[in-house]
Image (tube, rainbow, N blue to C red; front, side, top):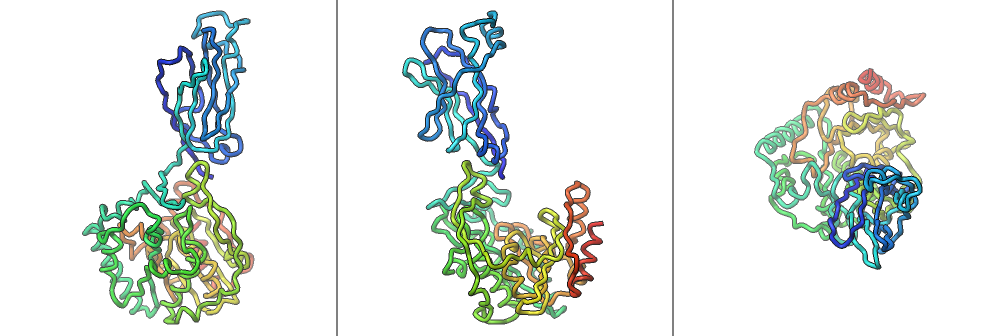
Length: 437
C-alpha cells in the first residue's frame, strides 16, 4: 500500500474569537495508506471559546460534514492558555481526538459559531508522486525522475552524448547478433500516452527523444516499438490506472518479439486463443498514489500463471533480479534470455508457453555478456521503456555489481530454488546462486 503525506495549512480568520490548536495531523506527516483506509486519519487538538456563544468543531470532506466532539479533558490547556486551575473548570473538556475515514483527498476543519462557519485548517492527502489526470479517468506520470511530460512535449531532448551512446550500443548489439549467430531484438515498451494520446492533456512533439532514437537504429537490427500495433489492438493494451500495458498488450508484445526473433508470421504464434480472463477492479502503480485510491476494471488471466514455471528467483528488488522459468510443454524447445525492465513481467505469462526456458535479468536493456556465456541462449531480447531512453543502456554491464550493491545495503531477500531443476537449467542456476554468495 502507498504511503501518503498529510498537508495542512492554517487559515487565519478574524471572524471568530475562539482559540484552538491542532496537535495531529502535523503538516507533512506520513501515513500508511492501509491505515488511512482502515482506521481513518486522527484529528487531535483543542478548541477554546470562553465567550457565552456555543461553539462546535466540524470537518468538511467532499459533501460530508462531520461534527468532531469536544469530550477530552485537557488540564494542560486550562493551565497554560487560560492560566487557571483545571479542576472542575467549565471548559476542561475542550480537547478532541477523533479518527475520520476520509472519502476525498481534500478536507477542511472549521468552527461553527452562532450559525456561522469559519475555516481554520485546509488540508489534503497527497501521494509521494504527483499524478497527471487525463480524460475519462486515465492517469499518467507527472513529476517522475524521467520527466515524461518534458520528453513527450519535446522540451527535454536526447542529448548529443546520449545519442552517441545509443548509436554505439545499437551498433554493438547488431554486430554481436551477427558474429555470435544469435537473433537479438530490442523491444522498447512505449509510454501509454504514446498509444492513447487522446486521453493525454499534452501534444506530442516530433522533437521527443524517442523520435531521435528511431533515427539511430541500424536497418538490420530487430527494433520493436509497437505504438500503432498496440493502439489498434482489439483489446485495450494499457491499464487506465497504471503505467504498464495490460495482459493483452503484454501478450501481443510477446508474440511480436517471437515473430521478429524467429522470422515467423505473428498469426502462427496465436496459441493463446483459449485463454480465460476474469475482470476485476485494481488500482495500479498510479491509482494507488491517489487518495482515495483510484481503481479501474482490468483483465486477469485465470488459466495460466508463469509463477508455476519459476525454478529460480533471486528475489532481488528491481535491478539485479534474475528469474529462471521452465515449461516443458512450450511450443519451442529453446531458450530466450531477456535483459528487461518491469514491462517484461506480464509478458512471462505468454513467453513461458512459447519457449521452454526463459531467463530474465532485470537490467532495462543493459547487457551482461557473462550471463550470455553461461546461459547460451538461442535468442536474446533487450527490453527497456520509452521513458528511459534519455539515457542509453550499457552494452557491457555486470549484474554482479547490482547484487553487490544490494548486499552492501543489506537488501537481499531469500532466493527461491526449485527442489528439482530441469537438466537444461542446472549449470546457469548454479552460477546465479554463486553470485548471491
